[in-house]
Structure formats: C-alpha cells, structure tokens
Image: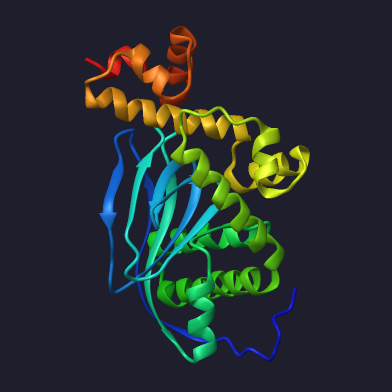
Length: 266
C-alpha cells in the first residue's frame, strides 16, 4: 500500500547506539526500565515474554516488533518454559516536521508484520553490526531506514488492524485483571462484537496463543507470583486462579512454567 503524498513523513537517523541479539535465561526480567535519550526497536526472534507497558500486560511472542519511544517505562519477565530471544536496536532520530512527530506518537508499541522482508532486515542489521565489516555503519543505517519505512507503511496503510488491536487490547486487559475467571471463547468474542471463530483467528494472530492458552498463561504467571510470596498453599493458589482441581493445576503449572508448584515453595 502506498503512503499518501499529502503527508510528508521524514526523519533522520542521527546515531545507531547498539544492535544486540539476546537469549534470556529463565530468571530474566526488567523492572521499570526507561531511557530518556534514545528510541528502542525490538524484534522477537523466539520464545515468549510478558511486558508491562502503560499499566497493561502483553505477551510478546515470535514475530512481534516493539517500538519504544524515549521516556516510556517498561517491565518484563521472560517465560520460564520458552525463554525469550530477541534483537534490540537502540538509536537516536530527529523528526523533520510536525507530520512526522504526530506519526511517531501514533505508532503502536507492539506490532506484527506479514512482510517477511522486515524480519530479514532485523536479522541482517544484527549480523552486520556484529561482524563490523568496512562500511557497516552505513549499511546498518540503510537497513534501519528500511525498517522505519515499513513501520510507517504499516501504521498509515492499515487502520483496520489498528481497530482490532484496540479491541483485543481491552480483552487482554480484562483477562489479566481477572485471572480467577475462566472465560469461554464465546464470552470473549461477545465483548468485542465478533463471531467466536473470527475472534479466535485474530486473537491467535495478535498474541500467538489461542484464547484458552493465553488465559492459562496468565493464570500460571499469577500462580507463580503467589507461590513465590510464600503465604499460600498450592490448593489456595489454585483456587485464586480459578482452578478447583489441585492435581490439574499442578500439571498445568508445570506445563506452562516448566517446574512443579511444590518446587517454587521450597
């Protein structure tokens, strides 16, 4: 899709600060990390991580791209079952005009691209930065311009996706705030006025999980926190996340977290 010539979007990459590929360990986390002088781009290569941004939790999975402006605080914890692997780029840019400033403010923090070339650009920029062959900075800046252009095209040319992003963000917030509930796909679909089959399709595309898998993931992360707190029995924690069968809870906990609940209590 072409960008309208009525909006002259332009920016300058002043400096690439770092490009790093990171494989997290099971105990990896961030606590209220914030940079005031740089932008952040992250490409999720594999695994899962739960991010807290603007007081909302989101599960980041393979293929997701995060666009984080200066001054935005975030916290995160990796999945213990599938630790997160990602490429992170830190950079500084200058906005040339007011149209560009407004566009940058409207870019969602988390995106997913159907264009595989965007993913290849992330991998190529990481490889070029790491190997540092002659001219690598120019090459990396060129790849960054391609990535940023793809983001502009996605934001400007795909308002329909933006609409469903807003709808699903509300559903995800409800699930995260009510981990003791067991929502059916029918009930969740009714919240946003979609058919269950279509809702399941866009939910899977947006999160990487089915609606039930996502609820179980949130429940087990909450259960892990409660068990770590050390004041509840396994049965009490199971009840607090809406599971009445303690044995089923233990199996699900080990499946999602990677260890048994009794091990957490040690």
